[in-house]
Length: 193
Length: 251
Image (cartoon, rainbow over all chains, first blue to last red; front, side):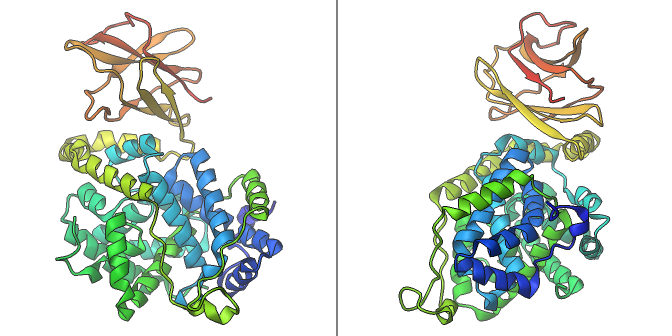
C-alpha cells in the first residue's frame, strides 16, 4: 500500500477529481470506490482517531464512514459544497456520535477531567505537512478563545455547551467565538488547492 | 437548553463543528431550511472546518481497506433523493433533501453526556482547575503522548479501571468507574506491582457519580501492573489484602 505513506501527501483524490469519483461510486463502481478510499482514508482515520482516540474504535468508525460513503454517494450534491467537505462531515459526525454515545466513555472521562485543548498536540502532528502548516498558521491567527473554542469542538468532539463549561465562559460567547473563529479560519485558509 | 429565544444564526459555527446537541441541531437545520444566506454561510464554514481534518491525517491499517472494500461489495447503495420519485436521471439529484433524523440512541447519548457534565463532576473539576493546572498538564501530557495506549480491566466485584499509559514518559493515568462503594474509613489504594517489588502509588480519590478523577502515576517500569486494594483511609505501606482489580499494562 502506498496511499498512507508520507510521500503520498497530499492524497491523489481531491477537489473536482473526488467529486467525479463519487459520481461513479454512486453508480456502483467499486474500482472508483477503492480509489476514493485510497485518497481519503488517511484523513478520515486521522480525524476519527483524534476525536475517538481508542485505536480499535477508530478503525471501526473509519469503516462505518467509508461504508457510508459507498451507500450514500448518490446523496452528495456538488452544488452544496466540495466533495472533501461532504466526506469529512460524514467522518466527523460519526466520530462525534461515537464519543457522545458513551461507548468511549472511559477515555472521554479522562479527557474531560484533564480539561485542556488538544491544540498543541494537533500542531505537533502536523508540522511537516504543507496544508497542515497552513492550518497551523491560520489557527495561530485566531484569538486564543476562538482557537480553543474551535479546536475543542472539532478535535475534542465537545458540544458548545461543554466547551463553554471547559473554558469557563458564557455559552453565548462560545457560540460567537466558534462562528467568528471559523470565519477567520475560512478567510485565512483561502480556497482549497 | 432551548434555541427558541436565541438568535439561531449565531449557531452556524457550532453547527459546522458538529458542536450542537442533537435537539439543537435539528432545530438549527429547520432554521437553515428557510434561510438561504444561513445555508450558504453554514456550508462555507463546513468547508473551513473540514480543512482542519487535513492536520491530523494518519493512515489506517491495511486490514481496514480490505474489510471496507469487501463490505461495500455486498452492501446495497441508497438511491439518490429526488423531488419526483425514484431516480431517473442525475438531474434529479439537485432536488430538495432532508436529513433523516438521527437514531434516538444518539439523542439519548448526547443528553446523558450533558447531564453528566451538568451533574457537577466536571464543573467541580473546573473550579479546582487553577490549583491543579500543573497536575492536569502532567495528565494531558500522558494522554497526548504519541505512544499513549489505553487499556482497561473489570473487577470481579464490579466496576472498571482504565489506564492510559506512555512507555516513553514512564507514566500512566488511571481512572475508575462504578467500583463498589467502601465503608467509611476505607479507601482504594493504587499499587505498581512489578516482578520484584510492589510500590504504593497513591490513594484513589473519592468517586463522584461513581467515577474517580484521573490519578497520575510516574516512574512506571516495563512489566509493571497496576493493582487496587482496599486499605485504611490513611493508606498502607504494603497491600493488606488481595487486589480488587489488576490492570496488566500493555508492553
